[in-house]
Length: 265
Length: 302
Ligand SMILES: Nc1ncnc2c1ncn2[C@@H]1O[C@H](COP(=O)(O)OP(=O)(O)OP(=O)(O)O)[C@@H](O)[C@H]1O
Ligand SMILES: [Mg+2]
Image (cartoon, rainbow over all chains, first blue to last red; front, side):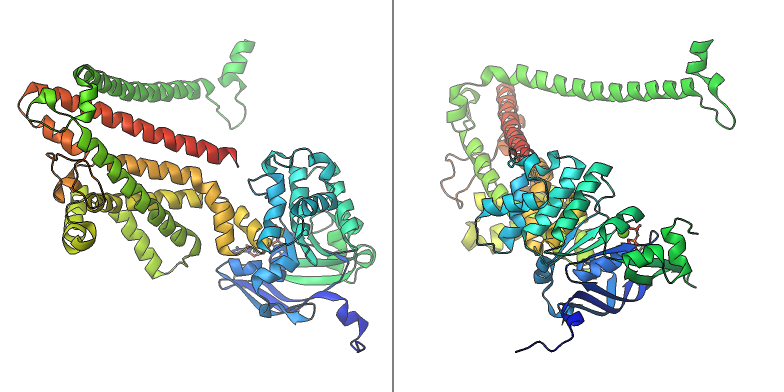
């Protein structure tokens, strides 16, 4: 049977509709609408504390792990409400790479095998480890020391190990929260190249404070900002979301223009 | 002039009075004080060891290990106490380790923060400070009297369970401390890969916390091995002419035997008490050695 839905619908991997996130009684992010298209890279930019990480964590329900966090609104993954997913299942399909590299204090091999094993991987483990490390452009550097601890790697290598670990369980989306903030320019470039290669198979959302990085790697860019509230706190909201090239050359909002050109505040 | 400039106040400029020499003097003062504290404790320990060794080494001979207690000091031996303590320690380790670590994992990783868990927490903290004789009375009432059909009354099992109760709070507190020291990023990494709580705890959190957990358990066991009061409270006696053959056997333990010997008027008994102390100390050291071995093995696999 022919799929009669408009093409644009099926091409959306993640869709956020009017999501607001509270920490306790504190409204941290308000009314975010956002479509993440499949096989594209979306960058989140904005000043510190405007809720980029918070929104990112909504997509794989990591906010569930913060007892005081509450998420209102709807998020759908492949057209289905993520509340209907089991969080464990959702997190296998929507992977995450953290700001600070956090390999397990185990061997490089085990770091990658763990996720596959707990998710019931049936195939050849050696082959999966090799494929994932190659996918993360790390294989050549570590192929002779797979039994060594992941903590013995450099920061950049650790971050690529974390990426390898994330792609080993074959997710559909990878969420990256400032993956390069602890890395030197060369490692950063490697990770960026990697994201380019991964794009054909994965949908990627990346949070970054680096404007060049956002403009280099992403197809679309979301600019968040924070607003002072009457209660004295700060409330984040989505200012503008468009093609990266539009955001950086011809944004609708004055605010966006100031921010991306470094004239903020 | 330049040396002065590097050393002290001359460099001070603007609002900063660095007073380097004063700060260095304070440094030296504290280093000396800390050194003195260390030396005092080491000296006291050395003196203790020395006198015990002088008193006790002479009477350690094969007979001392194979003989039963006797009214004649030259015939008296430590065999039943030695075996009793070994049996006790096995019971204590087998019960307190899983229960203590399990409770700590529940409280730290699974329990939500509500009035019930907070109350449990406060009470565990208080229990750690309860005098051991109270545990002895509890053991007397519960393990020796009420549960007599299972424990066999005044038995290795009753004694072991009583000591277990005594050290459970210590193990729970130490384990929670060790779990809390595991960085949260490790848990998040596990969850982000689609692990559930148990998988994260079992595969990552617990192995990382293991060295700390083992340290706590061994410290607790070291406390248990030297306890006399609770065992006397449940009715363990020094004069026993057999070694335990099952969990329900009557028993005696090293500290009870030593206490018994020390309390006698004849000086010969005091020497064999010192010998008993030496044996108890060697057992303690062996236990600690085993713990350090395991701890290092866990640290290597990290
Ligand atoms: N676990 C938490 N508990 C309470 N408040 C939180 C928590 N995490 C974030 N917040 C609050 O939510 C707001 C948004 O935080 P968030 O970490 O999402 O910002 P961000 O845009 O990622 O900032 P940065 O660029 O510095 O990483 C902040 O005001 C922060 O104080
Ligand atoms: Mg952030």
